[in-house]
Length: 276
Image (cartoon, rainbow, N blue to C red; front, side, top):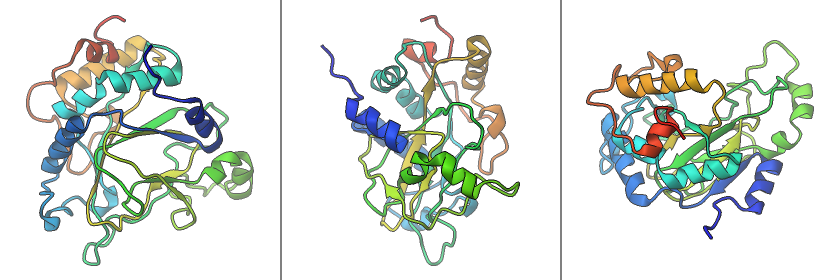
């Protein structure tokens, strides 16, 4: 019998703290290939720190690369798919097409790079049920390495915190003023995946290490409007364009060069191009 990726302890942590970490999901060679593609896209030589700061600091390390073969190879990994099937309890899923991260260390001559951030990606005030977010570590991240950090204490008492701090019309969930308080930093190795609730305030810790943090965002969800979602995913994959809502980002190539990535049978299912 195959061993499950997600344990009861993982589920309890997700319920109580808003996140979980699943170790060793992506084989290291897959992560290494993605790192090379992301570094090449931003013009960075990992052996030369002077090349790590080409992206504008206001992007906070976000890299608008979506369709490299190495990224699709990870999205369609059976092990990654198994994690999400266990989480949702269904085999019928669709993958998202998301972006990457190349986040260099803070540097006195490079202001704005590698600093701490904390936010929600969606307004946490509406009563709608939370959805799932996830990031794959493509490089090892130790404490103070600029990795994922969050504030579980707010998640546990979200309604109370919002009633005290988010009543006004000026509440900005993208910049809630939480970047310099006490946070929980998540360490990990290349190939680990962090899953978290959209109701959890999260961000990137300050990068005080000597290496960039490299990662990719990816999640899978049970499809809502399966036909419409599949048509969009297939169009973006086929044309090598970013999802509509992310077009026009600084540094983006539209479309990205080369032919569409080669997809496995599982990959075709995950974009709605083949039946389950």
